[in-house]
Length: 146
Image (cartoon, rainbow, N blue to C red; front, side, top):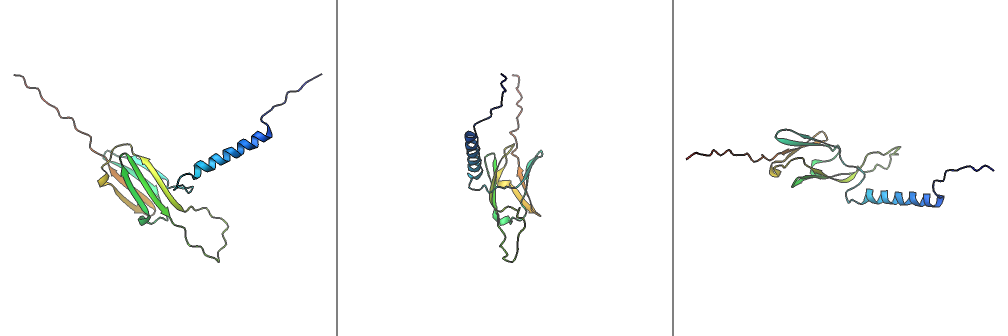
C-alpha cells in the first residue's frame, strides 16, 4: 500500500477570501488621499553648495494651477491638471493621460530660506530653487594672558 504526498496550499474558500481582502486593502490605501488620482509629477532633487534644486515634470499644467509652499524642512507642490473638453465626434482607442489634482510633500535635505524660494516653468519642467540657510559660523576667541 503506497501513499502519495500531495501539496496542500490553502482551501479554495480561504484563498478567494484572502484575495478579495487584499484587493479591498489595496484599493483603500491607493484612494484614501484627497489628492491621489493615480498620478503625480516625477521629480529630481539636486543640491549645490548654496541651493537645493527640485525639478518636476508638469506638462499640460498651467502655472496658475500650481501652489508651492515651504513649511519647516518640507516642500509642498500642489496642483491640478485639467481635463481637456471632450469632442463628441472623436472615438478614442486609448486614453493614457492622467488628469486631476495632485500633491507632493518632499522632505528637504537641509534647512532653506523660505522667503527666497524661486520657481520657474519652462516647457513643462518646473524648477524650484531653494537657497540653503547659512550655517552658524564658529567664532574663534583668543584667550589673553594676563
